[in-house]
Length: 289
Image (cartoon, rainbow, N blue to C red; front, top):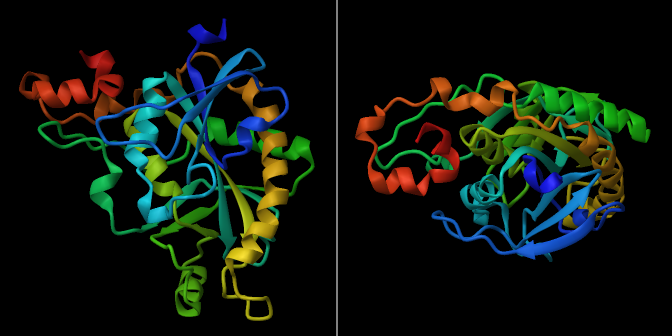
């Protein structure tokens, strides 16, 4: 039964759990040592798998990027035995070949954020440094690529996502600099999700949906919330098709490299772990107990 299998998490828009084929949905509010997640987590069954959906910005889009409690979001999913996460996220294009409503499957990140302390579960007596050279699960990314091609959407497999703070969009000077550095897409949320998922030994990949050309393309209308939301509606339908195809392709056993990321990451001797921190990180450190 799917209840006994490791689960698949979806972080994205609040309407994704309404996609066709999701059965026996339930909603639950998870308390975490890091505070409250963005919203209730909606669980359901699809193709015999347990799937959990978390609306990144809360239902109704109530939270700005800098207000997101990424640690609580990822911790809550890990406490539900989620071992794979698919992130659905809106991004701006920094290159001509990525047009609105295209799908990009990033393989790399560049960090332009300023909130590093909130992008780790560790500290308070337990030090860990996870390997992050390849921040995206290549296995899960290729599953998404196959599902995206099957849906008929134009998909770009690979590329660099540059993560800015927001909530304001880029200036033209910032957008041009990001282009010249060779970055492919820009967003405000996904890097923290990827870092925390790696620490939680969850395989993560991103379904980046192009909504605009940022503001570097002077012949285009500068990016605005109105422009983005017009494309978001179409992109949400595309995402539902891709997810429906990808979910049954995900294996049932968590045996990818990401699922043992802490094997070489934990620095502090276990005999020195504070009991309070060990308990707080129980869902993440359980196999080391």
